[in-house]
Amino acid sequence: MKPLKKPVDVNTLRIVMQYFRRDVRVCELECAGASLALHISNPGDAPRGSEWRIEAHGKHSGGEIVIAESRTTRHLALLAVGDAWGAKGPGLGLHPFDWGAVASVLKAVRIID
Image (cartoon, rainbow, N blue to C red):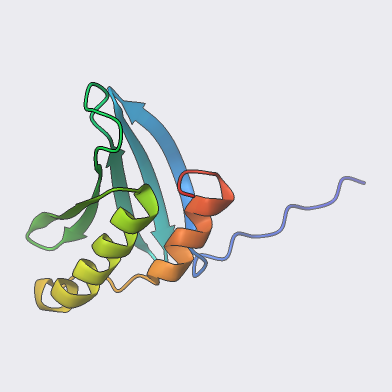
């Protein structure tokens, strides 16, 4: 008899899709019914050491809200986005994500260092 698959815990943060849109890596995540799309880019023709940009796209009843930050590494850009999301998100009605968990999930698949 074939073992049954374990049910997916919808309260656990997970990546549901990854793809490239031109030079931008898009990671779609879900947790507790809320979705988060991260757009990660670095200007390909920019000089070495140029900044990474991460845009966090969240849904709100009024549409989509984007919070973006740029830093010298993807990890630092993600930390900055998480800080901005935590500061601005409640006033904008955005779902509160655990940005430490977001970083862990992205590290597990080598999207950030």
